[in-house]
Amino acid sequence: MKQMSSAVQQSKLVVISGPSGVGKSTLCRRLLGPLSAFLSVSATTRAPGKGEIDGTDYRFCSIDQFEQGIRNNEFLEYAQVFGNYYGTPAKPVQQALAEGKTAILEIDVQGGLQIKQKYPNVLLLFIAPPQPQTLLERMEGRSRGEDDNSKNHRLRTAEHELEIAQASYNRIIVNDNLDRAAEETLEIIRKHQ
Image 1 (cartoon, rainbow, N blue to C red):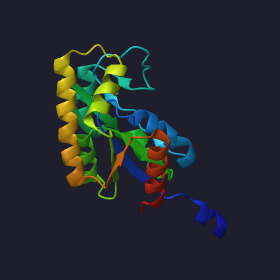
Image 2: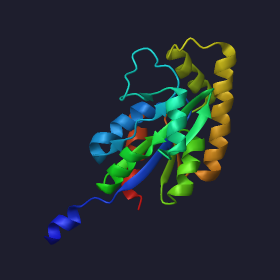
Image 3: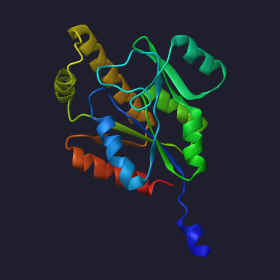
């Protein structure tokens, strides 16, 4: 019996934030297997992008549905970003933590700070590009069809988020090499108490 209890995992809550195009989603997927982790799927009111699957990439819902969820306290955190609601459904995350799993939330800095207020022991990690030009190249490579104003707005947002992360997050991980960034992130999560 004693051996079984020592094998029980300690649940951990991890927030991974960073600007659009920095590689957060790819990094998060790389962490799931080695950590046997749960990756939260955010809810949003924005329309699905090309190839996005409801329940896998996001939980797509109407503004009315989202606002009803707010009234019912169904979100751990939520915000309006670029004119749409985004939020983390509470039940799946709470269930994963109750099962002793590591729960990973891929959310923005604003959401990360909301989570920190509710869960002081959360591990806040910010994924940063090696330099702003790299981020711009990655955004252009994603071919979202954005105009220059939208790209510039995303770059300004990224700079602002980095400033907040430097003051409030546990660690900033530079994604200049995905394999290295994944190993560094994995090591930080494993050591977090």
